Length: 95
Image (cartoon, rainbow, N blue to C red; front, side):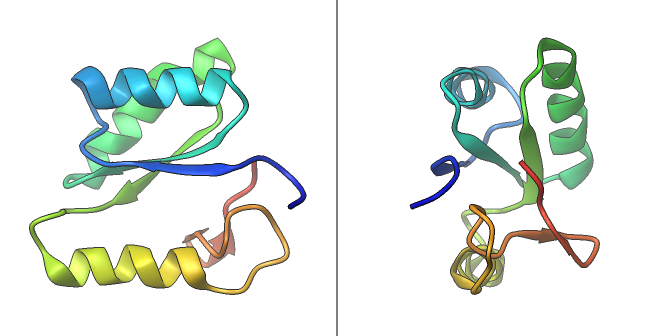
């Protein structure tokens, strides 16, 4: 596999999940930060950016089957990059 491994961390806009994102990104993983509230996920990612971390927020509510299906669908899309098809605003995520 070319490129970094991709890690999806749920409940990651604060606390332990956010720290897991920070550490995985520091180890070179391409990290997708899953949070129920996308705005909170975006704020969490903004806090990691000054430290050189590449992390992308993604709306995910693990209690909502449609939300889970969207993430599974995005993760399994064919893609030439390392993200397995994760898109934001119609464009593949860049690591």
